[in-house]
Image (cartoon, rainbow, N blue to C red; front, side, top):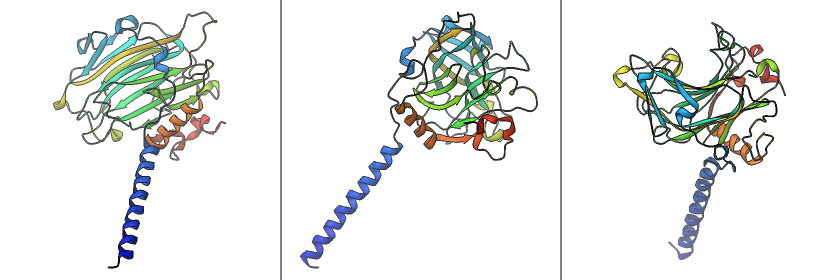
Length: 307
């Protein structure tokens, strides 16, 4: 082989290496977790569990140690907790660590609701972790129910589901709901993943709600539509919560109480960088959007067609 051929081959190899490096680097840059540029969680003080919550059910399956809460599900019972007061808007968050391994049928949750005051006609805003089988990721489900759409036999949910870009069983991660009279924003480690805007009175929860958390058996639907059930040979199923944050306008606050914000803008909304981070989460990790489900009757969810 001539020296010129060897040189050409060497140059071609170098060019291929550079192109491969560029493609790989670009791939990881595009898919890497972005910074939202703002941390709403840092704006609100952390409280101890008993400063804002109480046990609601399953007290024998609840343990509080150094302001961290552990609740668990076994064959006899799960457990749940509730805030000591209701809010008409606010930022509600907690850092959560989920149970590893086989958790099919098990739901771990952080949510807002007024079901106890308005049974059969309640509002609800959910963050739910749908249990899974080994080797498959947890699904984080967000949902909004309005004036009884989560009651009775004909449930109309507004589910948007995500996989996570980390292992939620390895460490604590912060999950939060920001609820104002104009919008609901769901956040994971300060990255907005979903923004649900008020488009009409009939499609937006406006009555005061309490903050809840729980771990419970939802075998009928939680994992792949109920295909896999809770298996109590793996009990107990733990959920760990810490870094509780409750900040907003309680239901009896004066009219001068202003809703809190999740962005650098005091009046709310999201910054450009936050919107880009949300777009990244939705492009790379959203696995279901009720508005894009052609099998659903969207006459029950008119917000899907509103500007």
